[in-house]
Each structure stands twice: as structure tokens, then as C-alpha cells.
Image 1 (cartoon, one colour):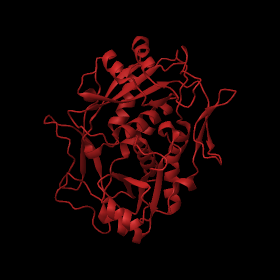
Image 2 (cartoon, helix red, strand yellow):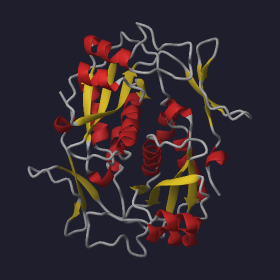
Image 3 (cartoon, rainbow over the protein chains, first blue to last red):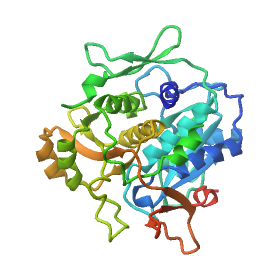
Length: 189
Length: 189
């Protein structure tokens, strides 16, 4: 059931870093994005794959992790992502940004989850440094980075409380809690 | 397999209009979006559901259909969507638009496909008329409309040809062809 996969597809930020992901796996995930919808079918998205320790180490410090967890600088060595997919917009194909990268990210992450992996969509990126580090030509705009690995944390969905606070938080046992609005509160009548 | 569902989840624009979709089905689909990722978990998306003939008839003429099929004004009576989900941004929650609506659209359409339905993401919308027709308060920005129904057309994926043309087209037997770029052409090395 797709619902089970969607529920299980949380934003994971701590991983079994030693559980390597090979390039073929990343290619299969990008293929899911390739086969997904694209506005006017223009298909402006391009992808950079990273699954070796050196390239991963270059990418990791350029990403912002879990803004609401102010005392947590991001996953420590040993719990970092085993792979990344950098999602680019090829501006020679299309300049304005639609919703293709949202669609692509969801396809990739659902595919990853089915493989027992998990990940996180990261939009807080030191883009100039990433462009320089990966020698990304100027025709490509950096949109998002998908961090991937075998999850090493438990993430649960809670109802939003009476105070309306939607900030995720981590409890004393390390469980990550994500408050989601109720269905009734997001349907407009 | 999620791949089978993604391959089967094409943009459908002709439907068995008489195959009604009930509100409970739409609620289950929106729930899939609710349970999906949201930037900073802010959850600014809201949804209007439509599955009765009168409301559907109000929405239908306000949507743009298949821009590349210049001789086709959209589905004729009898082949129109049986339901719509209007995706809104609640600007009192968040003003800038991220990628939440792309993620939500993909979750909803994959869920619809699993139920034997199909649909199309429509971004060409007469927004002022839709706002007026559905009495949508100004705090909500209209982002996209998802048209849904039981598909009544065959849609196939083809490789992009040597001329690089990505425009979809319909053959003499009514089959809708969608050229997709090759995996090698979207991975940047």
C-alpha cells in the first residue's frame, strides 16, 4: 500500500553510515524521477550522484541540518548519509522553476524507502561552495540535495497540539517527533 | 513495487466521467499529502475538494488542457474529470512557496493510481474566476488543481528522439505519447 510507504517515509537525518549505497541504486532512484510528471513535459532536472566517502565528505558540511534542533549541529561521523543526490535545474532547458523537483524528490524518497533506505530533502545549502566543490557548470542551478542512507533513528508523527506548534523535536530517548496538522484542519469548506 | 505505480501514473486527461469519486476517497488522498514531507514542517497547504457535477462543471472551464495538443480543447462532456482537488497555499502560515505542492501532488496521484484512478496536475488556471466561483478567501493562494477520474485513455512513454523534441502527442488511434529523456542524459558527471 502506498499509504504505508508514505507513512514510513519520514525525513531521516541519522544513518548507519557504514551501510554503503552503490551507484546503481542511485541510478534506479533517479530513474523513478525520470519517469514522473514534469511541467509541460520539459524535463529540466539533472542529477549529480555521490556515494563514495570522499565526495560525501565534501558535500556534508555544506548542508543545513534540522533547523529546529538548535543544539544539534547535524549527524556525527558514523551517522552521516551514505549517499547524496544533488538535484539541478538545467537553465538552458527551462529558466523558471515549477514543481518538478518536489515531484522528483517524492518519487526518489519513496523508492529509497521501499529499498529499506531513507532520506531527507535539504534546501539549506551553501550553494557557491557546492558548485565550486563539485565543479557544477553555471548552466545548472542547484535546487535541493537529497541525503540518503539506512536510517538509524525513529521518527514518529504526532498530532499538532492546542498551541499549534509545528516544530519537530527530539525526546530524551532520541525519538524524533513531527507534529502534523489534522485532516480537518487542512480541508477548506 | 513503487516503480510500477510510478510508471503507471501518467498524466491522464480523458476519463470515464460517469465513474463517480466520493468525498471519502478524496479525503484519503489528501491524507497522503498530509503525511508527506513539508519544508520546515510548516504545512502551509490547504485543499478544496470537488466531486459533485455542479462544482465540477464550475471548475472545468477554468483549467488549461494539454498545451501541446493545439487542436484539442480538452476532454468533451462524458470524458471529463469526476473530481478535483484544488491545492492552496495558506499565506497566513507561510508566504514563500517551496516544493510542498510538488510533493503533495505526487503523493495524491500515486494514491489515486493505486485506487485505479488517475489524474493530471494543472497549473494553467483562471485563478481569479476560480477564486470567485469557489469563494476562496484572499488568504489562500491557488497553486495547482489536480483533476481526477477513472482514466479513459492510454498513455505511453517513448524515448526522446534525435531531434530532442519533448512535446507529447496523440497518435491516430488516440494513444497519448510522452517522450522522456534517457537516464544517461539527466545524470551530470
